Structures are given as C-alpha cells and as structure tokens.
Length: 557
Image (cartoon, rainbow, N blue to C red; front, side, top):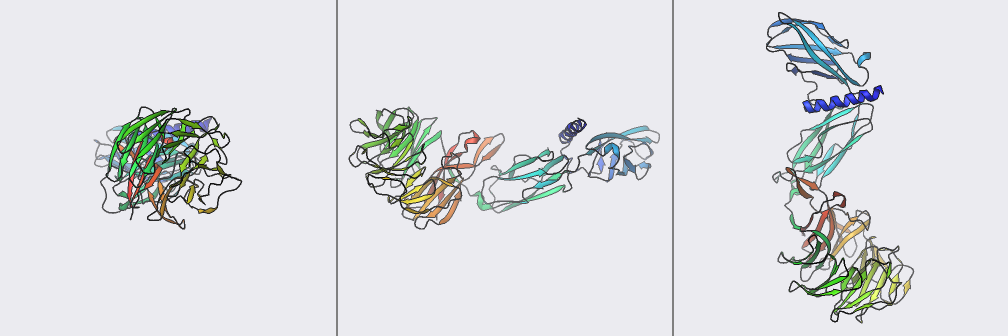
C-alpha cells in the first residue's frame, strides 16, 4: 500500500511539474531560480549548483540555520550579492529518508543579516532508475505517409519524457508524458500540410529529453523534397460503392451513396456529369462499347443507363437483391443475388424486361462475383461466400445464360480478366490461363501461368494496360479486407516481374487548426488506354470511422 501511495504522489508531482513549467526536463539542472521558486532536485543529480534570487535583498551576509539531512552544503555562510545567493551542495541519495521512489519536500532556512529568517523550498524527486529504449534513431521520409517510433521504460522507475526541437514542418501525435516500468509509447510523426512546399531536402533532430541515464535521446529526421510533389487529387462526394472504367472512351463510372449518385467522369476532358439516383447503388457494369451501363441497387431493382446522354434510360424491378451485374453486348443483363445461400442465376432481357431464373440451383451461391470475358460470350464467376470459391464459367451465347457451367474446384477470391481475355488474375496472387468452356466439373485448377509477388499476401485491386504490357495491383493482408495498402505496384505482364511502385498521399482532414494526416487505402486502381496516367481511388481506413473518398492521378513515364 505504501508503494502505491508513493507512486500516486509521484504521478501527481510529475503532472504538477509539467503543468507549472514545461521546461522541467530540459532545465532540471538549471542554476538560476526566482524568489519563492521551489528548487527541484532529482535522483539523477549528485552535485547541484544554483543561483537563487532573493531580491530586493542585496549585499547582505547570511547563515544557513536549517538544512535537510540529505544535503551537504559546501559552505554554511555566504553573501547575497545583487539580490542573489549562490548555493553548491551534494545530495546523499542513499540517505534512508529519500532512498525509495517518491517525492520529498524540505526547506533551507537562511538567517539574513538585518532581515530575519528566509525559507527556501526544496523538493527531491526520486524517480527510481528508469531506462529508455527506443525503436529507432532515424526517420527518413521519402513519401508523405506518416511514420512512427516507439520507446519504452524497461526497468524499475518512473520515466518522465518530453520531445523537444520539433521543426515547424512536422506534427507529432504527442510530445510529453510518463511511463512506468514495462509501459511503451508510440509516436506518430507527420508532415505539416500547412508548411510551405520546400525546394530542398529537410533535416532536423528530435530530442527525447527524459530522466533516465540517457537523458537526451536523439532521433534524426530527414524528408526528401521530392516527397512533397503537388498531388493531383480530386475529392468524391459520398461513399463509393462500386467503380468501372471504360478505357477506349475514358469514362469512369463511380457509384456513391450519401448522396446516391452515378458520377460519369470523363478522364480525357477531366469533366464529370452526375446523375442523381433515388436508390442506393451497389454495383455497376459498363457495356463493351462504352455507351451503356447497368446499375444494381441495394433493393430489388436495376437501372439501364445511357452514358452518352448522361441519363437513366429505363428502370427494372427484379426478384432479388443484386450482388453483381454484367451488361452483355446482346441487350441482356446478368445478375447474381446477394442473399439466400444457394440461389439461381438471373438473365434479364433489357428489351422486354422479362427476367429468366436459372434452373440449376447448385451452381450459384449468394454473393457470387461475375465478369465478362472481353469479346467472348462467356462470364467468369467466383462464389465469395464459399470455400473454395470455385471458378465458374457461364455460357451466355444465346442471351439467356445456360444452366450448364464449367467449374474448377479452386479458391480465387476476387478476380480480374486480362484485356485480351487470355489470363485470369486472382486475389490469391495466382495467374491462370483462361480455361475454355467445356461443360465439365474439374476437381483441380486451370493451368497456372505464374504468381504475382506483391508486398502483401493478397491482391485487392487490379488493372492492366495492353499497350505498355504492364499491370498495376494493390495488395492487402486479407483478400476480403476493406483496408488495403497505400502503395500501387507495377508489374510486367509477360514475366510478372515487379517494375515500380507508387504511393498515394495521405488524406488530410481539417481537425482544429491544422490538417491531420490519415494513411489512405487504395480501393480501386485504373490505368488509361495509352498507359500514361494511373488513377487511384482511395479512402480512409475503416477503423478511422470517417468518410473521405478521392481520386489521385499519377503521370507515368
């Protein structure tokens, strides 16, 4: 109980020290004190030299009449000159009264010539013997994404710390505090977005001032001026629910909720047309010619979109909640349901509005993802809620999807089809040769072309440029995770070797007087037909509990 009480009073003292004077750590060896000041001494000090102001008393002699037993003064008599007295003393840290962790208050009493007795308060703080251990001695910014470092107190004692010499171009998540034995503190270091764009590299040194033996731990910080390249970023109003990009027309179709809208962004002209929707969009598919699109909603409904006119051409009521849709080039639309486990594939005739429900219940499970193979009357599917997800091949050559499918018993998660329709890229990073439709059930997988070695375990976004023979991916820790990397990796389409990587800028939100940086997740990535511009649609991470979506553009060499 005594130890707990000592810790409590020690914590209260530390708080009061920081509240009254934020210069305690960097000036705990100061030698000048004002009248009525308390002289603070810690167990890190053995010899103390101070100048104490006694103004307006001047040119008087004094004698020390009362002194704590744990202090030995070099002289018991002295002079007050120009309103100040000099004291030199040693501290007996082994003296029983102050040998334990805690705070100890005492006084030095002077008998001043012709002035009487004067009491000078003195406080001894025994922090124990804390030890600061830090994760790094250097932070090198080559992008604007925040960096972190962690330090700990790894021994008995109470570690009080303060970070000083913070340059104006940095923002730290915290600059002072205290740690008991075994506790750690992680500091996030971010670029100050309000600082003028530098023309040369920046460098500084942070100092973690503390009361351990290593009382000034230094961390060098450098920032490349090239990291502050002005970014081409455009905000998206609302929360993005799905995106498709039609390369030859340059139209990017962005579905959002809150507000419910379809944004038709022309990447060639850099202009957009927004169609207000009365329902919340869940998925979208653009026709191969780029003139039409179909939107599936979070209710049993679809809309047929005329992209050229920028308007809804027709609405359809359907018999299921659409999870995914594909617009064929034959006036048919194909739908997979969101709920009901084993479900039936739907084919919607856009001319008549008649929906045909498949008869084979064992092929499609709720939340089946589907995509069309370019230039061919086949769809590829993956059952997202099953393991294995399987690879499904549907024949839509007759308009209505055939009930007979080809199937490969392999997990792929999400998937993307190469522009020539010959390869199948998967969340699991495997690349398959696109299999042929053969009506068969295969217990294995199609022929494997190779594997993409991304920085994280799963691919979450993909796009390809046939002209430059390059593809771009975003990876994540889990294939089903909403939160992804802030990096886009570039690969060679033939040999699957990594060529380059790009990192999106943090998302700055105005919180208080400064912009607070948040690391972004890249949710979709697209490259234009010429391979000259890369588009990243990014958002905040899900655990940030904030909504902010935007498009960032990169010019490719």
